[in-house]
Amino acid sequence: MSISAHLWAVVAVVTGKLEDRKDERGITAIEYALMAAGIAVIVAAAMLLLKGKIEDLFNGINTTPSSTTT
Image (tube, rainbow, N blue to C red):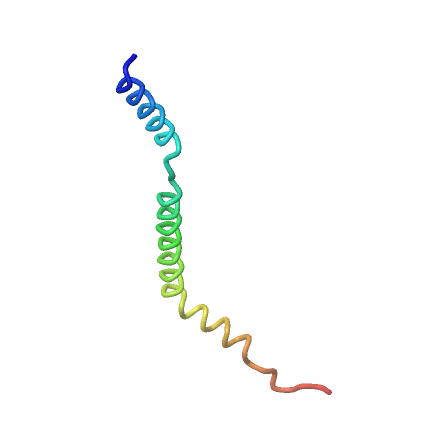
């Protein structure tokens, strides 16, 4: 076996090992970012749709009773 054949064998082994070590963390981070953005849009839409009911709820909590006993 010649030196070039050995060199190509080493290159093939190293390339194979590098293929096995591909990093997919960036792809996963993008997927999580897209999910977070989607959830944020859903929450914002729900708040806009329920704005009046949310305001009524907090205004009802904020009111103080007219007569207090001490």
